[in-house]
Image (cartoon, rainbow, N blue to C red; front, side, top):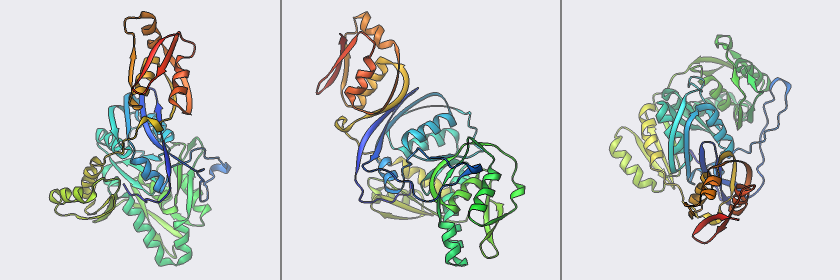
Length: 393
């Protein structure tokens, strides 16, 4: 979606994560990631954020790489948050979406945004990117949320430089294991020297812990209020905000990135959506018009993304799984663009390949992964230029 390409250089590696089976190509930044901005310390806890979330150019680069995902009987929120942490892609699931929904999907060689779009389609919800966070929630909200946050930042400008800086101030949103959103909003207000009118009208609710990358104060409060179908407006001198019903603007602008041939895609979309305005820049398409139409056109733009295919020579693996040895061999071979072969008539080999094995690994080579896979088994392996061959020791 919205991207911010830079000249930074990256190295690529591949993440293999199960259960059930998820193989994901991700981006590893070639220097240490530094979390910028102030943090939100909840209930007196100064928590260390161990997730180096991808942001700006790194997030865009990540989305240009292919992922292949297979989920079977997956509980939505647990699996989605696991995916989020493994890929270092921040995702916010609206409280109105049932977190226990069971998801079944198989996607091959698609972008991260295309994968999230597949989930949104199954649930008949929307998706948008607000700063460096992907939001999944009701279409009405998703189609307007990013524009709403941008509009609030612009509205803060009329109150002077000090107020403008307050609302643009970057901070993480990290909470305890369980948090009451009303208390979190009050804590944000105190930390940023603002007052919130109408907060008593929010219903009591409990959320599981939040861990989101640094974003503007406007973005953080916008996300927290979205699930209650609320937003806010400024009052007084800009130090007071009033919680109001969320109202979609008549017109929004959204920018979608990682479009391999943005001018060609834009030309196709213009024919289908005659009421919308389109502009292109590099690999990006900006779309302006009614929120609903922009949301639908944006889905088409995301569907047109073509991930950059890479070879196995730069592949490393990270996984936490308990799966059959054969499944790990087959998946590693596929993602390394190699064949996987063994003597199918040998019952000892077949039995060992069907046995489950528990593996935890971070950024290991293909050989390293396969060594862990055959550990404590009668198997050995050989990797050639074209295949992985498994045999008995």
